[in-house]
Length: 247
View (cartoon, rainbow, N blue to C red):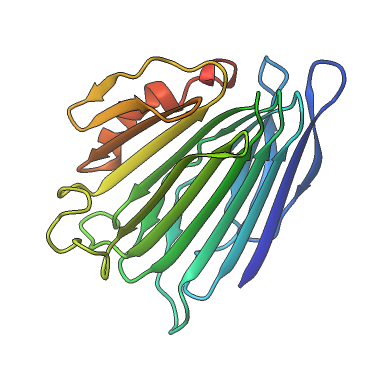
């Protein structure tokens, strides 16, 4: 399966945000679901089909213009599944935020079902003066199930300079996975990257979670846990603040 989706948010000239483009193909179906009090727009991704399955090629492009405020969520977790003998499934997410724009990305977790083989490539560019909150959560397998193979490659730039670059591999074939060297025995991990002119102070968020400054106008919060509930408890204070207070 090949599918693409695109969301473009623009300032409407009256203190609010309008969606200039909102289109997608199953299983990437964006739907406008709300309008926060600050004049922004909330869009949920709706899964219109099972997957991703091996061989699937999915792409999502998000553009936030000057002065626009966009919140991207999902109605449910994304479940990477095994499939026929084929290359790994792949989801490519690109996002750009203009000066004065705000993007808050906080979908439900990705679950790596046993036998899956999935790549996630994320590229985010934020202009000087833009604001970003980018959250990703990963669960290694369903309940009492071994983890599938997932490789996540994330690059976030701010003002043209690299702010955050991270690669994570879990499941069969991941270096150190059999020896619990990747997550220290944990089965869930979450990260929040914040970028912009106003940031909270770094803090210890729990026994297996913390936040720290990045080399630039950014903050990174990370949590590892036995299940996603522990991760959410640690990161929700950072990753689920209202859009107007998120960054």
